[in-house]
Length: 122
Image (tube, rainbow, N blue to C red; front, side, top):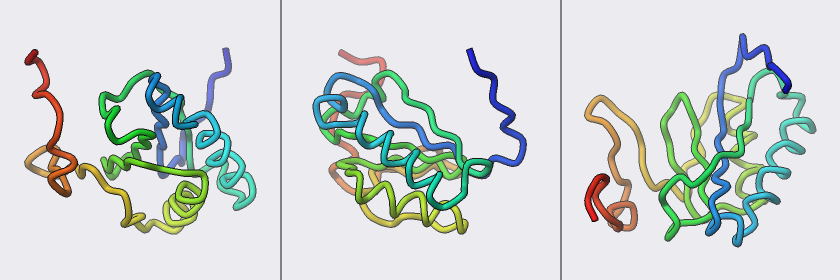
């Protein structure tokens, strides 16, 4: 297993690898992110992780950006290229936002982000 030196990393992009996201090509999205990071020379600044289900299947495919705490839905290879470019210059990609994290916790950006079950409820 590889151990990465994450010192100096400015952004962590998590790509959902749950079944709904995989069906909507999250694997291709993860590859597009990696290729764009390499193209822009940002390997030391952006780290990526392909995760298990992020729990937003209705908004698949999902990409989460930290430390900003922004959740993006309905992402595509073209959109994630723009996300990478914005992240490398310290700006936020302003489209497809589902949630943002702030002092009061997670906040839905629109009614779409509010759909779903409350965590811990059936």
